[in-house]
Amino acid sequence: MTTPPRRKKIYEGKAKILYEGPEPGTLIQYFKDDATAFNAQKKAILEGKGVINNRISEYVMTRLNTIGVHNHFIRRLNLREQLIKEVEIIPLEVCCRNIAAGSLSTRLGLPEGEQLPRSIIEFYYKKDELGDPLVTEEHITAFNWATTQEIDDMLAMTLRVNDFLSGLFGGVGITLVDFKVEFGRIYDGDFSRVILADEISPDSCRLWDSITSEKLDKDRFRRDMGDVIESYTEVARRLGIMKEMPTVIQGGVQ
Ligand code: UDP
Image (cartoon, rainbow, N blue to C red; front, side, top):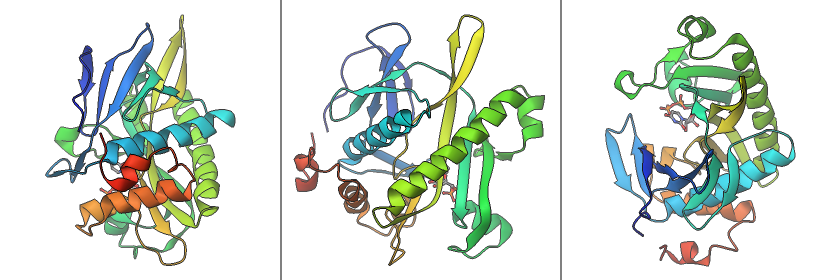
């Protein structure tokens, strides 16, 4: 793995590092190969993951921008980095679910794979020490994590992302089971606007082969199923974006 460049580090998370950008209001988002699950109790390095997620997220964010779902992506700089808009992160993970899986199956006793009566959006408070607890709009407004207007904007944008991603993946034989997005504020004087931030990749989505139901996402890592990188690569290949990344396929990612 290449050494991250020597720029001022702003923040280091589990899978990404943020560096100061070339001009005010921008940051550089670096995708690491680190994989974590269960609140970082399980850890591994998956060689090439950062490169694939950088490319998949670039593709998805670019496509979302073209349909007016504003997000922080500006452009990809190299295999592992993208230039992004600096935002004030809203401390919420917004999950959208179409099919029961993961924590929803556990919490409500729903068999994994059961179609939900409609898409369900949930908010989790981003707080590692607490294991990102599920919260309601009451908590969000009472503790000033976001305003009711911002909640409405996040709900509307998440549904648009869900419709768009369901179609995008559906078209290449992949079922979008659920996904997680994050949002941030950008300021224009006193006025602030909520835009989509973070990443959209097989780390943050559940993606099942539409015919075989084979998992093509981070559950392969969470559940020790093996072939994690192969599955992420398969997602990129089906999206038609593998051509520019021959070194990933060959395994020798720098
Ligand atoms: N998710 C994520 N980051 C998290 C928690 C969840 O990207 O910290 C994604 C996860 O990959 C899945 C969706 O959000 O696509 C719903 O996850 P769930 O609540 O079922 O959590 P899990 O069972 O994966 O812990």
